[in-house]
Length: 593
Image (cartoon, rainbow, N blue to C red; front, top):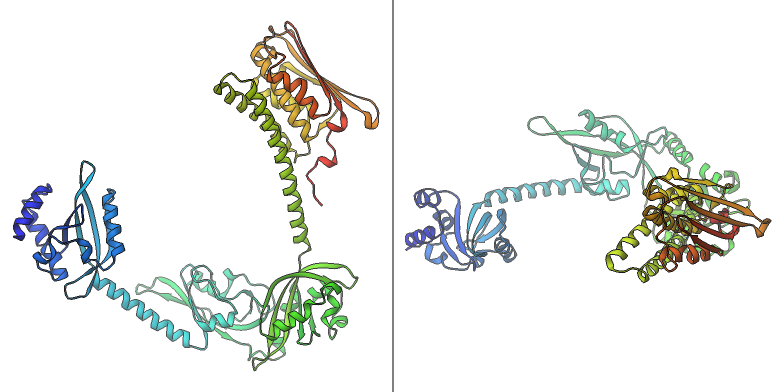
C-alpha cells in the first residue's frame, strides 16, 4: 500500500519516477509530502525510521500532530501557504517512543491556480548536534559556576576585547555590573596608572595582551568605582588560543592590592588621584563633619583644606536647602548610594552654584558604614546651556508660527483666485519656494536679517536676467518679518515680469531704489520697484493675488502703505513703512542669555 501511495502521489506531483525509489526512499534524509491542509501524503523510509513509525500510522494524519512545538509547524505551514521557501527551519518532532527528535526542515510548495496543493519537506536529524551543543553549554555552565565560586576577580573577552564573561567577584571588586557583549577591555569604571594619570581602557594591560598576543605581568594599576572609591590591583591578562594557535580572546584575573597597599605608598598614590580630580571630592563622617577636602573642592567652594576639614558640611548648604542633609545622612546610614543628585550649594563668598552630587557610604574593614564620600560637579555651564536651549526652542517656535501664518494667508488668498486645482497647486508651490528662498537668507545669517539687494536677487534668480535689475539705496538690513513679506512681494513682481515684462525678453530694465526720510523714531523707508521699456504689461490686475500682496498684504505686515501703478509697458510699485517695522535690530536676533 505504501508503494502504491508513493507512486500515485509522486506521479501526480510531477517528480521524476525513474530515480525516486533510489534517491528519496533509500537516502538518509527524511522526506514527507503534505497537502495544502497539512495532511501527510507520503513519507520515505528515512522519515519513518527517524520517528519509529510504520507507514499506516504516519501517512494520512495531520502533520501538526507529530510536532512538539505547535508554533513552529503553524509558522512553517503559513510560510508555505504564502509561497515562501523554508530552509533549515529548526523544529522538534515527536517519536513513537515519546522522545523528541531535533530536526531541521527544508520545504517548498507546489501551487495550482494560486492555491497550495502540496509541499515536499526534507527532514535532517540534528538531535546529536543539539545534544552536543547542550553538553557544551552544560560544560560552560559548570566552568562558570567554578569561576563564580572563586573569591578572586576573573573575566574573559573575545579577540576584539569585548567582555564575554565576568564572575561575581569581578563585579563586586569593580563596584559595577559590566555589560556583557558591550563593554570592552576592562570591567572597571575608570583606570589610572600608579602615578595618578588616567589610563584609557584601550591602553590597559588587557588591551595590550590582545593587541600583542602576549601575557602582561607586574603592571599595577588603580581603578575607580562608580561610587568614587578607588582600589589598587594587579592584573594577569593572558591570551586564549584555539587548537591551531589562533588568538580567540583573553582571560584576566584581578588581584586586589588594597590590603597590601595599606602603607604610606598606597595612601600617597590614592591621594594623588583624588587631588588630580577636577571634581570636588569630599569625605565626611556620619555626623556630617568634613574629614577630607581635595583641590577640586577648594576650586569649587573657595575654602582651603585648613578651613574646611573639621567643619560641618552644612557650611556649604544654603539655608533654604538645610533640610537635605539630614535626609542624605539617613539614606547613607541605610547603605544607600545617592547618584546624580542635582541641588544648590554655597561658595565661601556666598555665591550659590548648581552642582550634581554623587554620595556613597564608606565602610570600614568590618563592613560597617562609618562615613560617606561625596563627588560634587559644577553644572553651571550645563544649566546655562539648558536655559539657552529652552530660549532657542521658544524662539524657533515663534519663528515657525510666523511662517505658518504667512503660508496660511498665502494659501487662503491663492485659493480665492485660482481657477482650478492644478493652477492652485502650481501657484502655492511657487510661492512656498519663494518663501523658502527668503528663509534660506535668514538661516545663512543666523536669522539676523537680510539686505534688500540680497533679497531681490534671491527672488529674481530663478527667473534669469538678474543683470536687468539694478538696486540703489542706503545700507538696510531687513528684519525677519520684513524679509518674508517683501520676499513674497518681490516674487510676485518677478513672476509677472518673467511672464509679460522685462524678465520675459531682452529689453527694458528694472530699477529698485529706496531711501530713508525723517528723524529718529519717525524715520520712514520708501522703496520703489520701477519696471520700464519692457513688453506690454498684461497681468497684475486689481483683484489678482499679486495685486493683493503688493497693495495690502506686504504693506500692512510692515505697518505701511503700498501703491501699484502699471501702464502699457511699465510697472511701478511703491511701499512706505516705518523703519522700526522694517530694519533689523538686536531684538530680532535669536534670544539667548
